[in-house]
Image 1 (cartoon, rainbow, N blue to C red):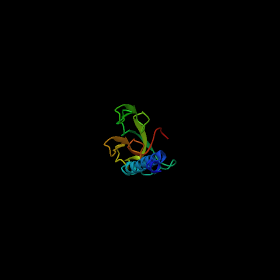
Image 2 (tube, one colour):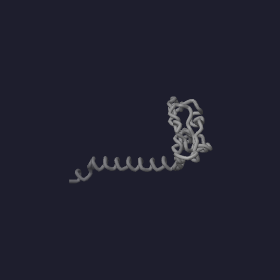
Image 3 (tube, helix red, strand yellow):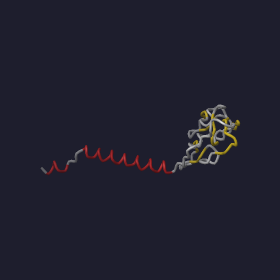
Image 4 (tube, rainbow, N blue to C red):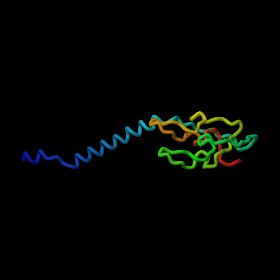
Length: 130
């Protein structure tokens, strides 16, 4: 009888391990999203009327059409889809979320594209002329 009481059920141990892993994922996700820059809802200019657009250099890639990711590889810029420029509603205004850089530095020190402007650095930008 005493020997049966000393053995532990392996399922209890694996359930506890699963709970610890889930708890770690939840806490890690909280700190990851806590360190993200605030996102702003872009205000869309009217599509009719006197709104004009001007071609501006993408600030996320500096007009090269490429962005260096965390592993050091160059990939097409998502802010301008590799074109190097975007069409911006006049008067051109920089993105409020990233200050017009198109990028932000996350908590691990890496640069990532801004989610407020899509990485192009401009408010009210589009890829093609209206």
